Length: 118
Image 1: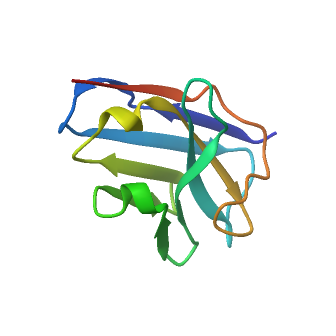
Image 2: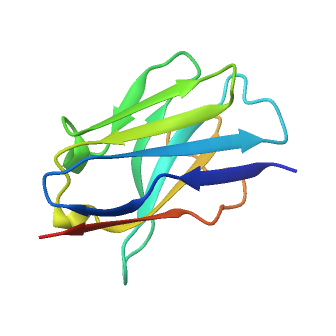
């Protein structure tokens, strides 16, 4: 059974940084893209960033230039470095994986809360 465990969230002031981590287990993720999503209160879950097995990264427009995604294929981990955080980045962040960037093939983990304050 696939498990996705997110960590690293917290409370940060606007302009600050956080690093989120996701540990995936239960199967091999060879050839899978690994993705970050977020869900703000009252909004639908949205794609934030994804990275292919061969390390090509994609970002939603609102985080380009501020967030960086990277993965460790040997450890089945994916990390999201978030800089220059804005109030609108406040959300619960989730990781997932699938054949393509943006896919979410597996059940959702508990997520990690990111709160950006002014």
